[in-house]
Image (cartoon, rainbow, N blue to C red; front, side, top):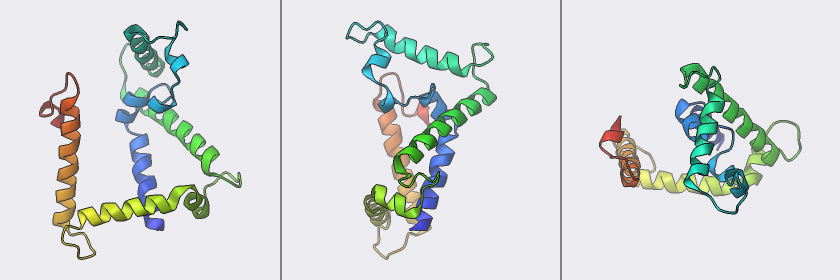
Length: 168
């Protein structure tokens, strides 16, 4: 169980610090943290395309600390680090029941660890194609390939994206 939490934590930390994450979450508020009123800048009760575009431009400008109109590697890293720190603070606030500045295994478990463990078990069972209780390298690679295919399909369905070009 500790390995699962450690693995999930390491993956989350890697994602949180990646430049791609900042490109999606710049400005500190993730998509689900943004309120309607944050976006409705003129307060008329309706969102326009211009208001949504203005939000993206403001997030970019905030990250562009030298004001040169582009985001350097250092700016992306700094912005990603800021977003990661904000997420860590929110996570501590939400899960640190005894307010000691750390999340214990018990606090993690109380916050839904059992549900996550069952999800991990279901994922393991899906990957373990031959049901032998272990995942071979072939099963692991097949699962990775399947996930890559799902991601490409999702990108291909979005307006203006071509799944073959998204392979990178």
